[in-house]
Length: 422
Length: 173
Image (cartoon, rainbow over all chains, first blue to last red; front, side, top):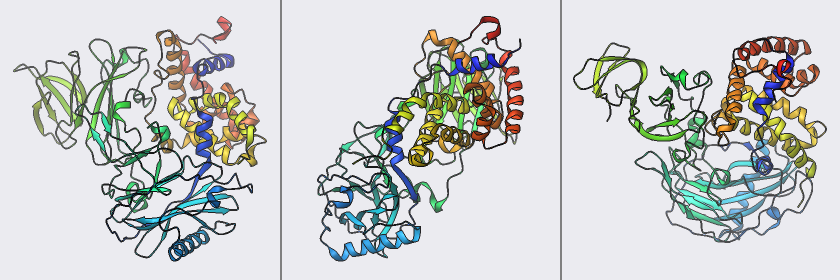
């Protein structure tokens, strides 16, 4: 069969005709467009820390500039809030630090910087500043350091609302003080991410109570990973609140982490239920199917563990997909998903991988559909009871549900026998 | 307070986002990645609206092509969406899903610039000059990419019984 240009056009349209814009796209685009981070914050030096919780609260109408057009800007015009609002000495230091930074980054200021909020925190005095510039308005936190006030990330904003801004900042040498500004909307706080025995994630949220323009929360130290999370309501990725001063946690030494190795294997028989080669297409599980396993609002790094994807077919004819999710220094969770043809994938089970073990992945599937095992670079075989060892290929295999033992021969020829299921 | 972009930007997003999403989808082969890419590009358009408002779609197309090549950056934002499972695919959409998987698989086998050329030329029906502008290359390069890409695409698609030539059936849409 040959295809002419019209045929090609036709099939490209067939493949895309039912796509529709995601709901809320315009709002998301406007929100995203309003904020543009112009400079990553510099290193935060050691800070003093008087460990006293200072709850503050209140309401603050913050509104920014409009795309460079001269207009009234309550963000710049409202009186300074916070318990250091009348501390002229501190406000002078804050403005001086801000102006030094403005000069360094070559911003084009218009008028004086305005301290929106200034207050005492357990990490020392902190502030939030807004400055009209030639391009709109620049905002940012000013953090306490041993050398005095230090300007964090400066965000150049081009529109009138505050959603999408860094609304909070981690302060202190231990990163154990969370300053949250009151932008006039409810904010929910979560201290940590926990894992349920079935591998799903759990976060508990409590409302943030503001007083006089901000709230200061004592949080577990956030030095090597970010466990805390903030969200508007309803809690969810679309309402996630960005936290400033996390670069050192997420990008130690200012460097991005190398991507984890991607390991993909297609098991024998997969071609009977997958219409195309999923490994060649880098097929990944639908976000909806993994929703319970994904942190709804947190930000995480990884420890370099492999990102495993295994594609196969179950004895009863379903598509099998096994994937790993790994956050920070937490264990790799291995999640099995099954789908009948043309039906969505559903997560059906999970376990954790031990990448130091001879057989890192052992996961029993429901409905007696077998045991998924994986050991990169190793030859695999199995047996049932005291029966004969059966070859199961290399790297990954779906063993019969009755398998009792697995023999793993690694690249060095070392052979280890382990129980088929933990 | 007013927004200098006004209703024109909103109209542009409302009227053109579906077409741009289709381009993004075929460039990336992944629904969520396409949505992320489109949003990122539209945010870029938003910020540069004053400069690009005379031809925002051409600017957006060029940004889509450029950014689709640098995939890792936005791929990490959320897990990829399966090709056949988005929108809660029902059984009566099975054929559409299969076609989509087939097309995306075939496009993925093409080098990035050939893929972009084929998508802009045959999905968007752009003239060669406009494709060249979007790709930032010469018209000769576009013709070359299109010719090679199309040949490979035909080869991949022709093997499938899901593809019925329009010349035989009148229409496949």
